[in-house]
Image (cartoon, rainbow, N blue to C red; front, top):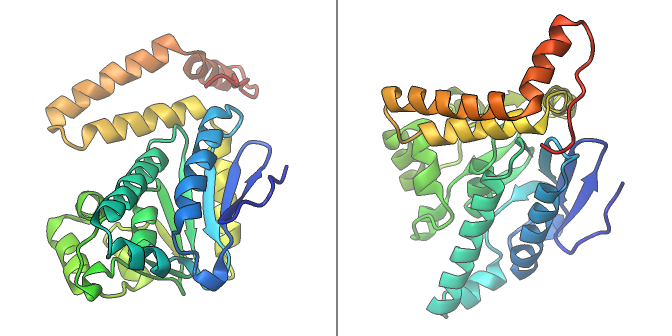
Length: 266
């Protein structure tokens, strides 16, 4: 079903996955007040729908997202309290996106800079077009990151490369971004739609519950030693495998040679 057009994006709910598409190409899909109020509602709707097993985020036009809207920034730089409010709301949005209990796939074919770059850092899997332009870009305007780059980027690429990306504010070659582990894959622009389709087909063949538990395992291990992380992994494994039906259903469906019957409540 196709949801009604919201001011900043559409939400298209398919059989078992959802697509968010940014729809302000003339404004380079920048983040304005409408986005700050609408996007949390969309994420909440997705989280509460148990039939959705994956989310794709994409955009219309030549830009994926260029960060905060210039009109918003003009007001923010004149009002410290308002600027703080914007940053706190954006922080919560990206945390909510990161913490969705399903895989979040980001398809970037145009410009992703500043807050748009930080948005893709909050996704689980990022596919780039070979024509995409991505970069943090904040320090080019003599401001530091405010939407999570300094926290998320070092976890992906290491502290030295993260500092280089932020301090230089350079655009990153898509294949370099893939090489350093910033994004998952780079495809030719004529191939990326099909590759994303294949990825979604793969993800939605599995129950949402196993994606939820996998995200929990990986996230919880980031700040732990290997000894602590592997211990935590077993704790979560036991909680899921012994407490929910999907793990046993997946195994017995395999050995019995039948399709698994995933339960909706996952």
